[in-house]
Image (cartoon, rainbow, N blue to C red; front, top):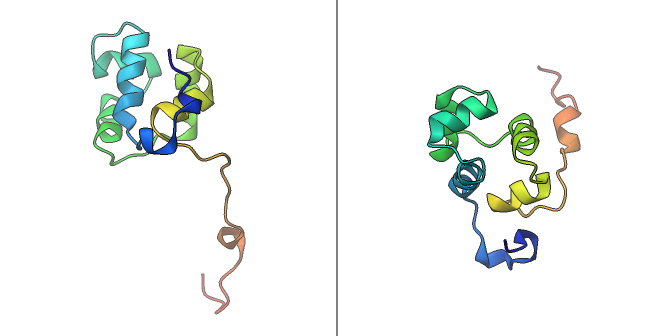
Length: 101
């Protein structure tokens, strides 16, 4: 298997379908319903991720890691997420200046 982390940035675009399809293939599953059972999530979650209406959250990414033995870095690379670090903006924790909540 090609090391996904060494691919050039323009070779991979964000595609959660690639991640889901790779998991189905690696785990020898039949379809999305079987994947949802393996991940212990409701089937609509997989559908929403496929149609890009729901992002792959941290807890789901960890569950994917647990059942597939792929590293989190490899899982992120499969869906085209090439960010080196995740940061939370400090603005999210500051109160509003006008005093309203």
